[in-house]
Length: 66
Image (tube, rainbow, N blue to C red; front, side, top):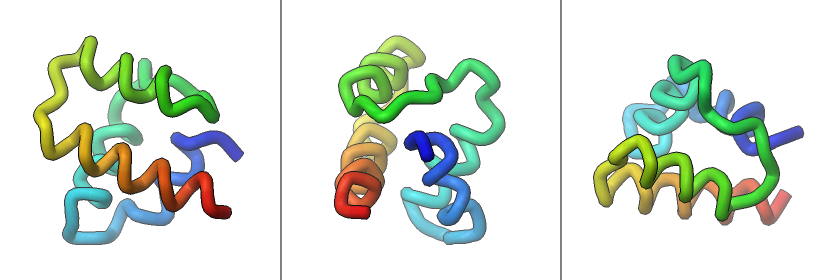
């Protein structure tokens, strides 16, 4: 399971993780990867705010633990 697939479990949360998951789902260009550097690079390229980057980092930590 890649990071984008993992994010689906957060879709219904009212939290920064849920916001990020919904953004990832609606973004057809979001990378399907297991590497945080690619996720972070994509978010930076797309002009993501600081909160989105922190949410991605938090979600990726959870992803890595599973």
